[in-house]
Amino acid sequence: MSPSLYEYVAQLPLTIEGHEVELLEQAVSSGFERVTTVVTLRGEGERGLGEDVTYDAERQREELGQRAALDLAGDYTIDSFSARIGPLVPAGDQVYTRWGFEGAALDLALHQSGLSLAQAFGRPLRPVRFVVSTRLGSPPTFRIVEGWLAADPDLEFKLDPQSSWSTDLAAALAGTGRVRIVDFKGAYSGTPVDQPFDPALYRLIKRAFPAQVYIEDPAPSPEALVMLADRERDLSWDAPIHDIQDVEALPWAPGALNIKPSRFGSLRRLLDTIEYALDRGIVLYGGGQFELGPGRQQIQALASLFYADGPNDVAPGGYNVGAPRPGLPRSPLVPADPPPLGFRFSE
Image (cartoon, rainbow, N blue to C red; front, side):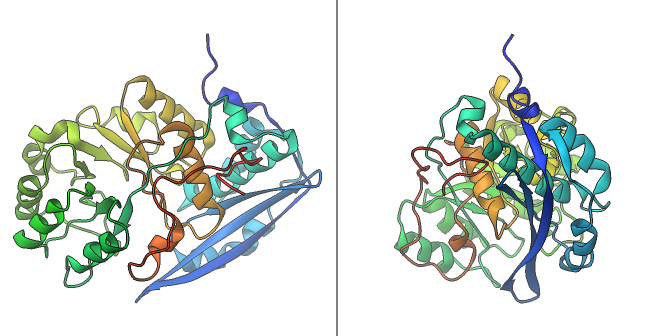
């Protein structure tokens, strides 16, 4: 019997002699300052990097000292380190913090073993197709997408429909033929991106966007699901998915899943879910959490390894900041050859 995906890395040896944590900060838009924490694990002359993407900036600052004070020194395997770190990280956004440490542990273990991610799994890194995830301003306008397409006519998009979208705007966006995912954000509550269930908006999106455009995270209400029953194979899920049990609890077998590694917290839950989906022919694509540091390369590396052809929301960071402009990396992103050591996509 072939090993599970997790078994490829679970027994990698890992020696930790010390660690540091450092805040990264970036003003994103009015009222939103993105703060993440870079985790550095050190041992045997090597270092491994990870990124905690907890969204609460004040929590990141307040808990930095606690994370720095964790007693992590010792000899482990990836599996035993996972068992160690799980109970140590703070409650609340625990999965995000845990992912920062587990990502760093995998990076360090691979470096200490002289392995790339591709070598560890016995799979090649492949060029990564990506989409640009963007909101359209307030009030929403076609100009942002138009500007990006002027810079690169081959770009593809993941967009967040809002009740303020007009019929003309939806038609213009659909008419580009470049929209691959529309994300209703129906599973969010109390966030800046909430979009409560709006039957008129759902009808508009169904009319404007044809089959094979993925409809992500509809509202978890019976009325919303009834409205989308005829698009079952186009439904994709993101925010509710943290493990295999969450996939099995969905109202229908998913057409696709947006894999955001930080939502899973542990490498075991992440890799088990990826394997479950691949075994069942479920389309996968990667997603990010506005990483500012090494976490962005790590989500690109996972996409490259397991779902390179999906409409991956893993665009280079330049697409998240500033106006549409030429000169940014184009899709697909080409991995380094030979692959770099550790848990990363390029040097």
